[in-house]
Length: 305
Image 1: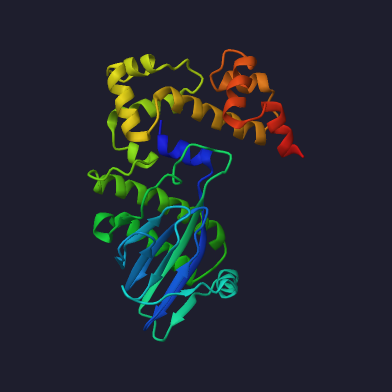
Image 2: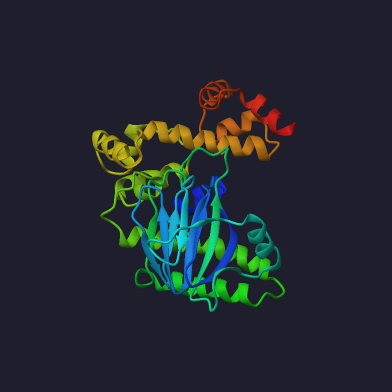
């Protein structure tokens, strides 16, 4: 079971191109906080990222920084540059016609591609939403990521038939490659996020089993046996990595799966309840109501309306 792929699929964590920025001289752009995560990929020159509560971060060509959702931040040509607000109309025009958003003065000395990643609001399992601080991956730490970023820059520079489809696929691939590189190169960091939990082999193994068979009657004891650790060890590692018990995570994931199926399909509630691990529709309805504050049928009706 590829846990990351499965969670990204269910959570709807898909990306979209924001804009390509080409800038020179003295320049700075302050970005309002966004409900989704933002990935800045520097394709040329040097860019400084300023985030609330963080020291300015130098990001060089081939580097990328993933900024957590809801984080007000800016990009600039220097560490002490005063940043202006984003001209949304100019950004929208650049996005619409495929041309870069130009800042500062000519010639351009830096180029950065801004990408946005949002998660399905009906899914509570936090893939990107629980990130505590910006995540930085350098070009030296992931040459594969750099090559993919170059491919994206080429598609944007010379649009042709199929460019839109290619860009969408590349944007999603960049997120996966970024996460791979960050997990491989930053084992000492403990972010307290879902992605950080992937560094713990015990938790990762338990999550893979839950995601592979959500319908299985998982208990903390059953997961401990499956992962060859004690119940106390599994509980302690889960709390440290995810801030919750194994049982709470199992319930959360099951309700997430059920929520998406209730909204997007016409499957009977009875069928969904069994598919996500509940012995009876009554038990499922009780758990769903606790998690979502409404009965499964009423939840589905809200979206149908």
